[in-house]
Length: 280
Image 1 (cartoon, rainbow, N blue to C red):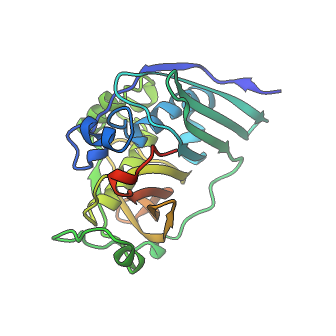
Image 2 (cartoon, one colour; image 1 turned 90 degrees about the vertical axis):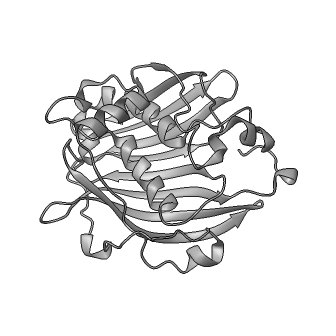
């Protein structure tokens, strides 16, 4: 039998109204058929993780996995209800699913997660070399992205100020993210995955649609995180152009330590406004 996770209710915040990505701007988003500027996928993911961590604990932050999909838009100030169930559990493992729902759209964000029994399968840091970010970002295109061998590496220190700003942005109340040994919030990894895209290329209005995440030990406050990776694939579907990034988030110690592996998918080019229907 399934076991319900704690219910979480939150008022959504579009934290990117001033972003370079104008899909978060009300005026432009409405031209594409949306009800308003899109709440970023990483913020929706933060909402999804709250009942997961409340129900599965810190073990999920250390070795859990998630497959998150952002199916329908959430706009600023909407009431979001996150519900989920543990669909299987024993002494050391668990499987669960969660959904973020609004009255206007129904299920908007979904995540299927696991808590494996043992230590995560390690990632080979040598397969993900560090590279400089471009001085001038070229415009994104299928041709360009298809020939990227190594992405430039964003680097961020998740210190007390960054942590406080991030937690204020996502509104997560859980105590595991506060204090001298606090965990890095899992949605911050996806925020850094976004930076691996938009700090390497110039992108027009774009949409984060899916991420597959594997925690490889997690990170703690005070650590410097590098997001290393490459373009895994570029493809077109229904007039939209997608890019899939293969990323390793690394704690930049003397011996770099893998923190999380992320396969991150975004629509980097939308059809012309005149022919665009709302995204699914």
